[in-house]
Image (cartoon, rainbow, N blue to C red; front, side):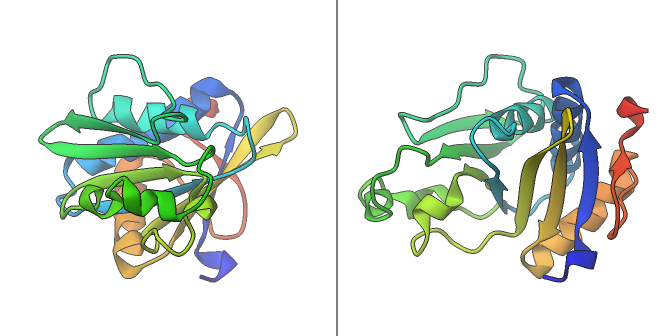
Length: 177
């Protein structure tokens, strides 16, 4: 994927990260296809916070815990399933086969995966890759389609989110300005 295909946004604080996730979740409400999303970034970058925002955008109002020890936390929301994976403590990618990982990737389901590199060789290719990095006193999120479906979803999301993204620079969401 070319760097110019990426959409970037500066996240000043936790509220901005939740807002970004919420816009992503809202765009999933009228998206009938499933989506495999890789959340990448260092420990503490804000991956779980972003996933919490996605879940809130889908209408979840309860607590969102990182499934670090259980590996996966399924949520039934708005007539669809979102499976939140955290593979940080995964010892070997083969462990995913033992837990029946392939059963979680059903048509129409959304799978959001933190630490996807730990499942290399077992996980499917991502439709969407979101990389969160520390930038100054905030964070920067870079969203890239990994498949044509991912690119279609990014276009759908960008058109419905009210957030302007460019391929070459960083922009701020409305909530951050």
